[in-house]
Length: 144
Image (cartoon, rainbow, N blue to C red; front, side):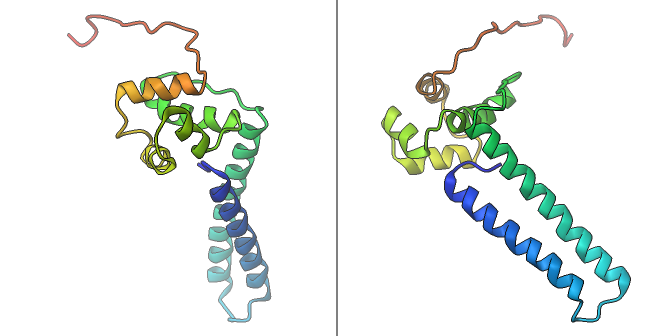
């Protein structure tokens, strides 16, 4: 998942490089066998498709065309990252809003907030103006 403008630009560059590599394979200067050539082209195409989807996802978030749903506690980290992007807020701006260094937000997002305390997650959710519309429901006695 692309999390910031730097990663966005790097991903776009990598996409162009892979597309050029695919074109270069068409020239087939290395005289690869048809089977090997096809395998390399397929491998490149898989990566190209994946990068294109990541770019589209990031663009859609930035343009607020993607609904963000947090259906479980496991979805919370990605939801926070997506909410920040959709708000047009940089990692640096979020960091300033909660009083930490930008690198701390980068670390949180890189490890999907695994090292963040519940208090910090709450603070970040408030800074991102996230409203939890539905209450959490517990189902008791299911594991017995």
